[in-house]
Amino acid sequence: MNANQNTFRKGDWIAHAFYGIGQIVGRAKMKISGELRTFITVKIKDGKYWLSKDNTNLDYIRPLASPSQILQALTVIRKRPQELPEDYSEKKAKILETVEDGSLLSNAQLIRDLHAKKLTSKLSKEEGSWLKKLKNQLVYEWSLVYGENKRTVERRLRKALKLSITRSTN
Image (cartoon, rainbow, N blue to C red; front, side):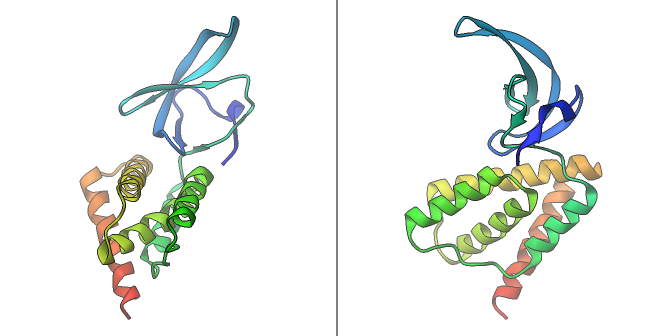
C-alpha cells in the first residue's frame, strides 16, 4: 500500500488496511517517550486513530478508490472464486498477506473467495470476521465514491457475489 503522507490533506478520505475507511480531520501533537511528535488525526466510524507525521511512508494507507477501480473490484468479485489453502496456517498467512497489501483488488478477491468458502463449509471465527470487515469496508468505500446509499451498494455486492458462485458451479 505504502502512500506518502504529504499527499493527504484535511478532509481527505483514506483506506487503512486494518482500521478501514476514515477521514483526515486534522493534526495533533503528542508526547511520545518524552519527545513531542506531530500526528495526522483520522476519524473512523467507531473512533479515531493517529498516523505519525514523521513517518513519510505510511504503510497500510491508500487514498479512496476511483470509480473505475470500484468497477474493477466488482469485475474481480464476479469471477469464479479461487480455493483458499486447506492448511490453516497457510490460509491464515494468505489472508493476512492480502489484508496487509490493502489493495482494493486484493480485498475484492479475498471477499469473493471467503464468501464462496462460507457457502461450502463453515468459516472459522477469524475468517468470518475478516469477511465481514472487508465487505463493510468495500461497501463504505463504494458508497462514498459513488455517493450511493449503502443498502443499494450492499444489494449490488450480493448480486456480484451470487454471480461468482454461479460461475463456480458451471
